[in-house]
Image 1 (cartoon, each protein chain N blue to C red):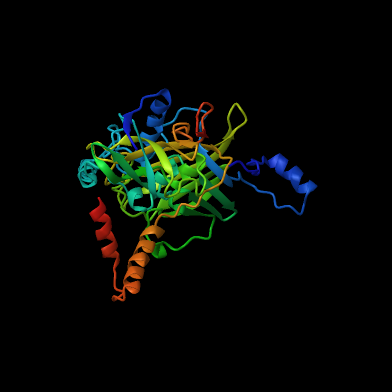
Image 2: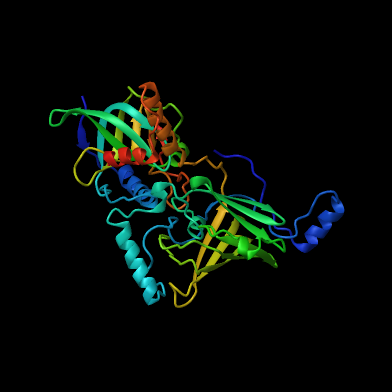
Length: 266
Length: 143
């Protein structure tokens, strides 16, 4: 599904100044523009696209970290349950590893970078600059609260206010974690734009030292496909109630009844 | 009318790589045996291309087990459409052949790795597990 998309543009200061003179009415970005669709970079070796699997043996886990990893292994069971099975969000940083090889979209404004992963239409927002939500108003979530600023051509982001990430498969973390992220653009030797994403997890509960992961993306020439999968169980409840209505019975089916039917099929 | 037969091919081998990765990505792959490939043929009762996984119910029939419905899982709707699937391509009543990773317990069912319906074949082995894009040699659609 190829489509035309604007070329990601990195404006150097001199070029920006020239363009300012040539087209004064056009706003000139002062920083790299990450806007566009991206997919796992294919031009070089990096870890598998999936963020799944189990934590690596080389992670610098604390004793408590090891205990929680082992506990989660038992919780997930031999069938290796994971959040995506139940349409729960991946959270940060797992969604940034593009588990399952799906594209991701970046939409950039001067004061905000919005990132949408295809799976589950999972969205995170990075607020750039001085306008920030007061810490006491930040609702903890799996994406956390992300505050960014520019360090030259690198967007530096600090993500806090995370929910517990014991179920994050490759790099679990606690609600005490802070994730420092860096986004930058470059071109490879073939002229392909490469967006480099780096995340450093600092978490005294799980790790004896910060853990850094890195992913590279390349432009994706396609479309994001709608992916909501939370709708289905809602429609199943409606179907169940419709059957009751048509049968002249009390319309009182509950979501627990839907789950019971699903469990019965397994 | 239908059969279950062993199926080994170079294409099948490449299918396994992607199927194993993606299946592991979204849910447990433990119930499927990705070390095996079999082709099943039957009549579609239901074919729902959805997220996080596609589900198909196919009527199978053979001398050993008689006629019964079997349920198959598949990749996400996103991967189906990127592999060339089109809405309405597979409908109830259509005859279908499915290459699957069978269930590990030997029961009917499995994880869809390719299928042929109404003269068209959709396969997932042609997608790179790293990029999700069709590879140069990948076969995703055709007769």
